[in-house]
Image (tube, rainbow, N blue to C red; front, side, top):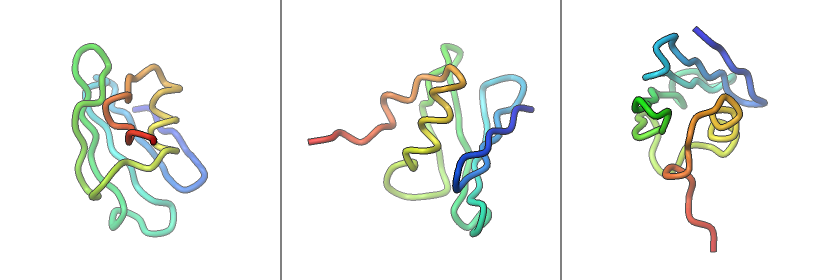
Length: 76
């Protein structure tokens, strides 16, 4: 398992690179959830929090080679 630490989160990616998780450093799994990736490395779903995934999680996943474009909020 690969673990990525950001300023506010710990992000885990399982060895199969098809699923992972995230957890807030202070609030734990109360502000955490699961991540699901397709075979092409595209993040296609997550759960645990409403709205959008925090930017630092998306940036960390992108730095690991995952495509998170569909999960980024549209910016005006």
